[in-house]
Image (cartoon, rainbow, N blue to C red):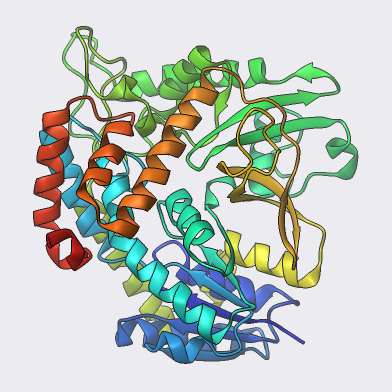
Amino acid sequence: MRPKIVVIGAGSYFFGRPVIWNVANSPIMRGGTLTLVDTNPNTVKTMVGLAEKTFEAVSAPTRVIGTTDRREALVDADFVVLAFSDRNAHFRGVDCTIAEKYGVRMCSGDTIGPGGVFRALREIPTLLAIARDCEQICPSAWLLNFVNPSTVLGMTLMRHSSMRSFAMCDSLHEPYVRLRYLKEAGILPENADSVPSEIEARLDFVIAGVNHLTWILRFTYDGRDMLPVLKEKLAVRAAEERKAFGPTEAGEAGRTDDNTYSKAKYNAAYSLELMEIYGAYPACVGHTKEYVPFYQGIGVSSVDPEPLKVFDSAERETAMAERMAETAAYAEGKKPIAEFLESGKGDHATDIIEAMWGNLGKSFYINTPNRGAVTNMADDAFLELRCDLDMHGPRPQPVGVMPRGLRGFQETVIDTHELTVEAAVSCDRDVLLRAFMSDPLIHNVSDARAMIAELLEAERDALDPRWYR
């Protein structure tokens, strides 16, 4: 027996193609059913075409279904993966542009700050509608959220749905995250593609925190602390970044014409400083640098190396259009499917599904209630933790204590996320203001009120009508 996997949001920029590649290459999933759901019929046609050509090329006996009717798709589902979004890049651009007017700079704009709050307000009504459909049609299925803000939507399912669920983010995709740091520390060679059991037995490697605010808390090998080694490598990369993006020898201002993606720019420099402040290594700095107020441009002294570069929605929309055009070329036979198979890779969600269904005994980073893993945080704190898992669900591995400084930071973000859930479910403007004022990026009540009013008006057609009662 093979699983039926339903993907809602099959045209996802990050997820759509990898799930097809993974199902085609997995002996556990390839004999089942893959149902691709999207509100855009042309997207459904393209993704089904890609899946059919891929499965045919590898002789995978996988049934492919494409539909715009999600309720029809949910019948007999074993796993429902959520990858939908409502005009993602467009509205992130709206969020970031309005926030920047009030001095809030977001390099991603989909998890924390005004952008994270308002993306949650846009996505949660659809999330809960899907969850209600699942409760009626496939109540024994696992509901896996891959939509940002991952923690907020995961909390929403935990508190407002009876479905078995958890949330995911590919920023800590195993085994690649472990491999990355073992290679960086010189423990494994660059061509390693797995962590040998004898290495694992000598390793103490712990990452924990709220999604996108995760930290390497411990990294020892044979009893040696490897965090100083990572710090040395950061210092080298930070110097290289400053040379590439910094002022010229004549003392001119730093470059403003570079096209470095906002989530990638100066990441080593920001990481190095965050490591010096907190004594832990930021494991997702492209997002984490957006969570702290240090790089917002606030204060008397200038920000070193510079305030955050703001998310470029036009750049993302162009990238999404190019990727979909390439996908259509594969689906229509204009590009060889062998090229897709050779260049493709798997994804976090279907790796997890494969491990659960096949009882493979693998561990993955999953957003789930703490359940005592971090001993000085609440059991229901929704954290990204390395978990053992099977068809009974994830079980967080022990972490220990979250260090002071980081713990307070984590609790602030958790409160912001919890209040965002409450605001999205109730459409209560008082609770929404409370969520804003709990957010680490908001420093002025009048600005918060103005941002809320402006964002509610700009995104009226994407938000729950109850906001306008």
